[in-house]
Image (cartoon, rainbow, N blue to C red; front, side, top):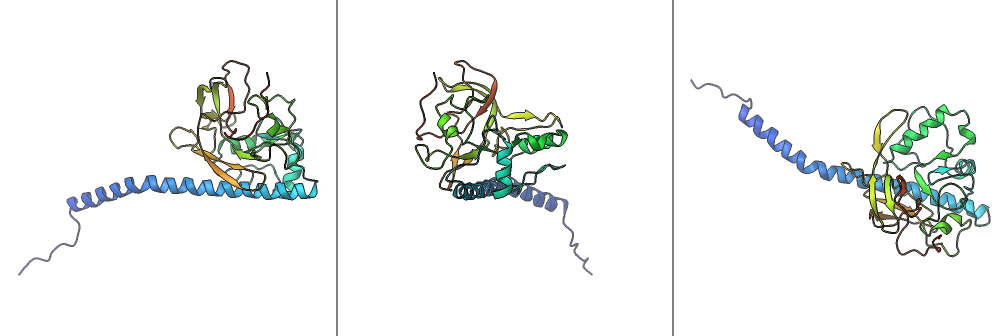
Length: 270
């Protein structure tokens, strides 16, 4: 009488199956990661569109003006007047014990650094009276006499404009937070950029820019919001000039990349 055949896999068959699965995963994982990054890019663009609607609603109620950020400073810190605008037209900015979630409209879904920095407000008893961080660069209606040299690259009028329309209506009003730390010469458009930053509270190291490439932290690009409400994705190009401090020599500082080529700028300060 014949012996009943075993239905179990042999060791060789199991190894073959595992090898095939490993190959499939190696093929699919980059595509899945790319699809996920594309999804976050779209989510981010929708956030900026909501900002655009809120800005236009504010302008309708306030004679064409942008929300007032004269009490903000640098690029990412927005003043208490902007916090009032958020509350009335977008979303209230409140202290939270945990990081803001991925869907929060004030932050790009890929933004880790400013979600951590936002928690610093919890240890500041005057946080509700001081400027607060956001996950985007909001550009107009700023005080050009503040510490940040807004006009270092001939784009001071992007920040000084207070109303919709006019000479700089083609310039962006907001962008993704594309920033790093390094040395740069604007005249030579050359230097080095470090894309990592350490959070002082948790001592964790994260990428400083949004939409960062997984291995290097170099941004893939960023979304830009314009006056008419449209949002455009611009691929990263280090040759695009940046709006940051320039004293005629290379300086180790925060570097902000948001000046788009082909848009009229004011005359550069001497």
